[in-house]
Length: 160
Image (cartoon, rainbow, N blue to C red; front, side):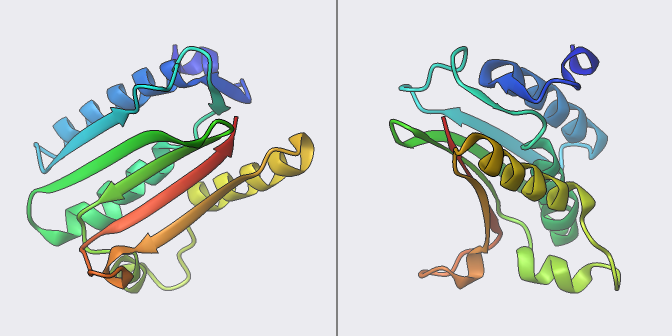
């Protein structure tokens, strides 16, 4: 299933959720239950009808686990929520309770660039130009929120 869909530029949200669930189950097993994950899809979303760009969620989920949750040395949580901002905009919110984006950047090796997330940002920017549908990513260290929290929030906004 995964290899068959790899060459497609878009995928039904339903299929992406199945693939994401497989991936997160494997990672949870790999890291011996170090984290729990929670997938939440708003009731007004028809996952069979909505198409999203292929493979845009998994790299952010992976970064949340590797760079956010694992370094905190405690059990963590990863939340991935899907909701409509309005009739034409889908929000995908990937949130963890890890060490936070700023601390993770400090911990990164000098000169390390996240190719996965940079590639996704480029894909969404290109899709916006090609389709005229606004697609973007916003990353927030939750310590900068009021009230301050621990972790990182990534919001992917897609016109559907």
